[in-house]
Amino acid sequence: MLMTEQIAKWVSKKCPKLLCGLIPLFFLILAVSPASFAGVNAMPHLRLGAGARSIGLGGAFTAIADDATATVWNPAGLASAADLSLNLSTQQLDLDRSHNFVALTKALGSAGSIGLAVVNAGISGIPVYDARTAFSTKFDYSEFDYSANAYSLSYGIGIGNFGIGLTGRWLMDNFGLDSVENQSGFGGVDVGLMGHALHIDVGEEKVPTFHYGVVAKYLGASLGDDTVPMVVNVGLAYNLYVGNVVTFAADVEQEFVDLVESATSLRLGTEYTIVTYKSTALSIRGGVKASRDVQNLFGGFGVNIGGLQIDYAIQDGMASDIDGVGSTHFASLSYRF
Image (cartoon, rainbow, N blue to C red; front, side):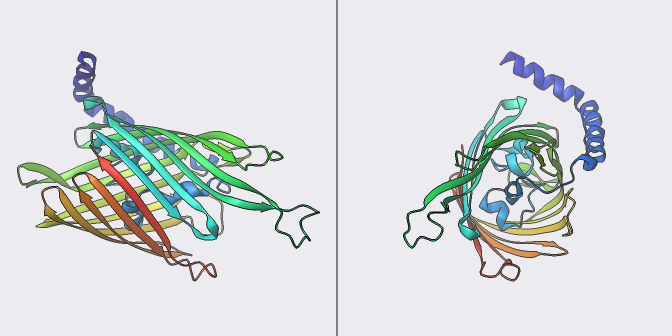
């Protein structure tokens, strides 16, 4: 405990110098990385995000990620996470694909917070045909599963009104066939910054109303012979306190990938939270993600009762691009201790 207090005192004393050193380093990484991060994305499911709350906001979450999903959106948000938080999320995508997320974070007092997360995407029950079964009228083919997993360890710490964070990730690709070699590789490093400003008095405490964040994801990531392109998100958010709380959030996302389709997108989201009781809240959300080629609409709601939060989100907008594909549903359960 004494060692933790000494670390905290050192950090607070060195805060200005530390930030002055980290911020230029962060932008230096952004400047030199794009040249080595071009190519087709080896793990596209990583960009789906995590948590129905953030999805309901259209993914505009870089500046306000303050729960276990910060391990995916911006590790700097762990500086604002609760003492202990858990998030379980699932979504059923088109073509029988699934996407699941589980994360656990733990605060270490003034020494920051750590987070463990697993992201899983896959398809089960894929039929296997050979020369004998390809023309058979009997349903006697075998099946296999495909899964792609990302395991990550995150760390974040608050320094005054700033937060900084890092995430390290390991990737595993499993085809479930003896004849296919499974792959694994380094999933890269995420580097995130977050800041808070314009504090006002709410009740008996001062709370920030303006938030900003920037994160560079998948630095150095690769799987086999394929690369995972770097993604940079810059986000702003504002909380309006008018009895209840209205949050406006905006993100600009840039994926460094060599494709004909636009790799730049804008995410906008709004959340209206009605505090009905001291430990109960109801939130309604809406969002949009737009690029030159694709536009998606999002909506959702959340209920928080004594730290237990249930969130639901729905995504629409793909039906016009892929025949037969309509809305996608997201659900998550989280708890803060």
